[in-house]
Length: 488
Image 1 (cartoon, one colour):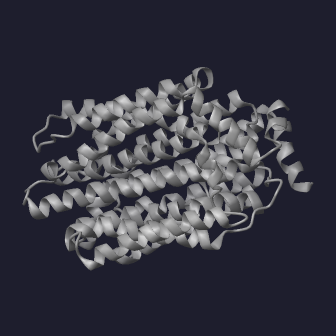
Image 2: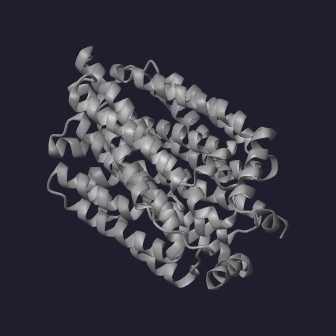
Image 3: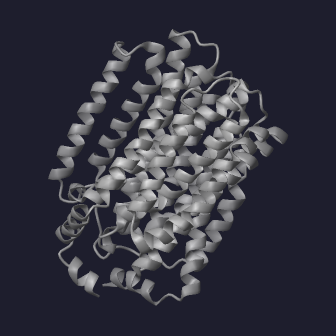
């Protein structure tokens, strides 16, 4: 009864308090988003500092996203059980400590380890913050608008990250990109404790330890095989072994989740076509973003010889569009549904990556400007419908789990995107003896073009009337009281 009252208080919050909570939650997303874009800008400097190969730079990114993807689902259900504010504040604290450790890392190996600590804290932030927002904004139209603002913060982090990161790396050093998170985290903790009310799900969920371990084994083994394959070869036992482990662990995970009483992932969610579509679109969109940032950062600095600051300025058109357009996407979403934003996203992301599929060391900056601008349009439109589709139709009690699965899909996409395009580039450099990453990146750009096309096709399927009916049926199946909740 007490936990139900926690959720009910969300309905009584004033408009000013609700949007204050949105601002605090968005601060956490800004911090995590800045970390991703800033680290990408710093990759060449980190590589030069530690004499790291391309695979080492991949692990600097993927160690973080791997841990995020592995723990996000558990964090969502844990927050629903133990308290969303408590989990959120814990995440901020761990993220700040991890950032401080990264800033003093004496080697690449320890930097990767400290990035994993960062990710443990980060896993408690975005899905939990989205759950807080979902339970704070109970009106569907207001919630869609709030999600649009939330998505805009990703664009803001993309806009600030390359420029701020470039300035810090150029003037102070790559270590400064991590310690800047510490004061932001401290402020966010103070505001969260002061203004965010505690809330929990009406029914507490147990932690699914077996399911959690299986998903960790799957993601780690798959990513290891992809990143290390150019150096060792796909037929090497060192690569075939992890691939077999990944396949077995995924199969075991699905079987276990269907049998356990309180699973990490309620497999019934996947009976909803919009939910499945949101998961796939999130993977494709963030694989595109991760691959895009990785390839362009190395291209602009190592091929074109730009400083981190000037490389960040070159990508600013993409970031500005990604910052300005999510609220527009949110308004369209609240009035017309997700089809229009998803079609725009799919077409523009495909076109942008196609423009870069024949990237050369002498490609004009005007052409790059156009490609970056169009990519920003696509990414600016895609994020709000992903989140809204994932939680739409789901009972509020399951909001944390549903949102965490969507967030997990984003991180899986980012992990796979960096792993695949980096491995394709490394393989091309090794076997075809390309002298430039721009030429070696061509296969990766074709993969990213396919990601854009997948968003377009899946988006059309996800927004059909048949798909919407499966979402309503699934929600009623998960929670028989769903129809009463909708009527209320």
